[in-house]
Image (cartoon, rainbow, N blue to C red):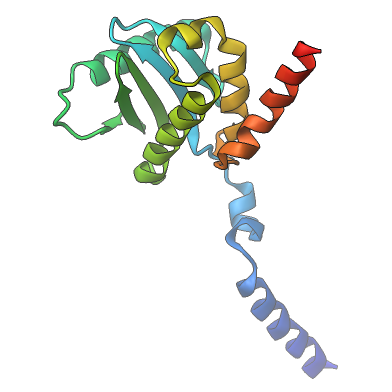
Length: 178
């Protein structure tokens, strides 16, 4: 009987060591950390054209955060790195013509993956609007939010395939035509 329970214990240890990290009790009790904290689209004048927060930030703190983030990113030259360590997170940004896209991420996340996410987002916008401009974003903000929501869910990247991202918008456009 003791031998059976010892074997069961060993089997359980082997099984639990093969489980993914997310199923271990220690990681379940940790707070759920979002990969992406916020996503901003800003013009060269520092005006926010799109903002999406994946963690709760009070409204007055959002404006202060956006002002500081915009100041940090816009003051950098093109030759400087597009990754900035800022407070307790990192900023990843890219400039496209007169628009900057800035993403705040967890300090442990891969900057290059987010850098590519930004480029993929712009490519999807380009495909949908056929050469996207700041005016397209301003006058079709709902569509831009749909695109972003198809790509990022609750602070995690969920889709990168351009056709799958645009499918719901094409359905909406078809319904609007009829």
